[in-house]
Length: 218
Image 1: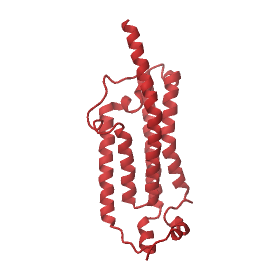
Image 2: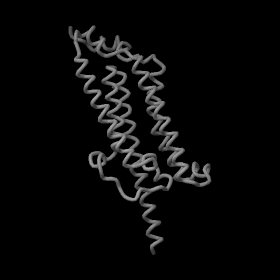
Image 3: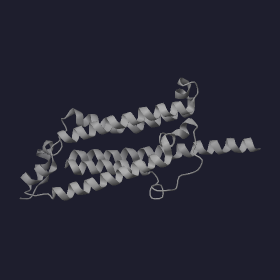
Image 4: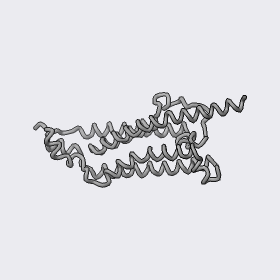
């Protein structure tokens, strides 16, 4: 039995339950997180808004920002995982309408490998950068002594984003849900957009730092 486009459209809710509120909540949370840390990070860089709350102690302010951002990451992951658990499995649709028996074990094994690899990238990135380096310390005026070039930064420009994306795709494959794959694609997209905003702004911060250091030398 060959599956048709009309069958997919007519039975879309059997592939992705778009009527499920937590599904949309997960998507909104995925989009919100990079918007939050970019907006708040720039606000801090421009006005020291967070630092002033901690008596101009930039390190304490950055640690507070890290705690909030990390917590938001946990709530995002919880919503995504919970949403996927409630979503229909793509294997059920394929087996019923297309008589396709998907290699579930193989797909889930690939998902596990992606999840493991993504986790390695995320954890090693955090290890290399430390807390302040991971959570926009440069926006707070806290700079690392030198650029990190060791693994995983010798493989990827933004290994934390790459690793996080791998983790979401890995979980999507493990959960066997089309909704998980869709959310993973959105994660990839918002990270791409985030890099477009963060790259030039970070470069501007370092240019300003170099200019101030040069002025001190003179």
